[in-house]
Length: 77
Image 1 (tube, rainbow, N blue to C red):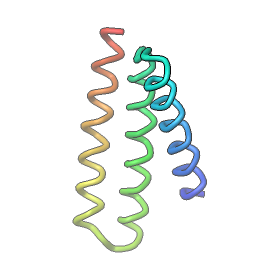
Image 2: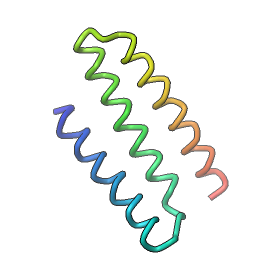
Image 3: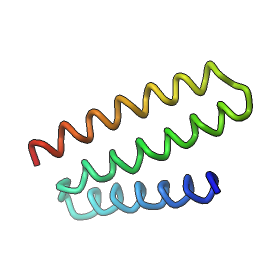
Image 4: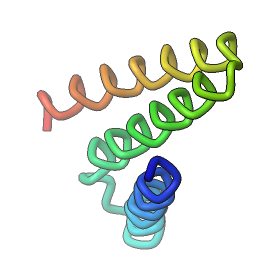
């Protein structure tokens, strides 16, 4: 289940990034960051399940920073 969700979030992130690059319209960048944060959070959960606690902690911390950046950007949207 987590793998399917991670792949779905990766596709959404890539789609928003590709749209921004091709159209030079970066108004959807906060949504791209939101989906990327979710993808990295799921990667952290998967690493935690594989008993790689150090890498899992790093991934969760990075995802929290990306969520903060996304929400901060949405406030100024």
